[in-house]
Length: 365
Ligand SMILES: Cc1ncc(COP(=O)(O)O)c(C=O)c1O
Image (cartoon, rainbow, N blue to C red; front, top):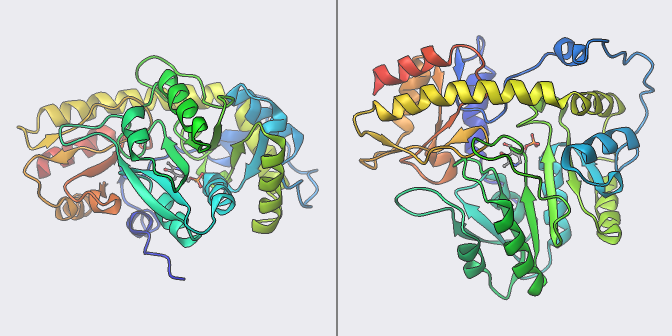
């Protein structure tokens, strides 16, 4: 079995792990970063990790971290199964749904691991379009129209990477109920929740027929903790997930679980900083698009950390991204998502210097 090259992560790694790294990272989809010192100081008192025993954690995660995750989603701690990032949560879900002939319905465009991991785990993939030629939007109706007799799982990512569109909670309710009638589960990937630019929205955790995956990497801005989870209210299904996790990674790290619980308890400070950075940078980005003399168009972000503007003349954005990288600004080429005329711009990671990055992009345009 051969996995396709992960073009997006190759692009990010080339510049972010260079010495020195790129000056302005507008390609990553994570929030503004934290050091261990800044994280442990949240809440004031400091966090001592010296006495943590370096043994395995329970496969589903310790009660303390599951309780903190549950509070984040307004869910029950028993529903939570910890994972090594949303990546492992996704792999567990796809592994459990895999059977001969089964299809997974995924968004287009989408986080590239959905299709690659599903196909690697023996599933077939079908895509539903997130909007049309004039912009991006979710539609429960369009998703249901793409369902076939072979569909075993539907993936919804809201707020959505790369387009930043959001499916309102009432529409998620409708979609989940309609899929339940066909015995198809709805997987909601909420890694960009709760970053919204309109009305705040509740997590989809607890909606009947919905399984949620999420993490600390994106809205919570802590990708280095490699912490994710699944929220599954059904005890029998949950047991299968815990069993899968025992095979995949045995357990998480007790040190990381401790830091994760601390971060979640102090989430308001992390989320307030994220919202402030994202909104400040978004205003600068909106001015760039408006001032691009019609070269760029976009769907204005509704939530999450990334947007997916496009060149109106349909040109391939990669040469532009290469030129921007040479000027110190990292933007992800749309071909990493199968849409070459687009650019993925992350506007929540760069807490300082976004204005200078925008000036450099404007000069290139
Ligand atoms: C939509 C989405 N889901 C899941 C992930 C996986 O993230 P992690 O494994 O860091 O939790 C990503 C990472 O980019 C993502 O964009």
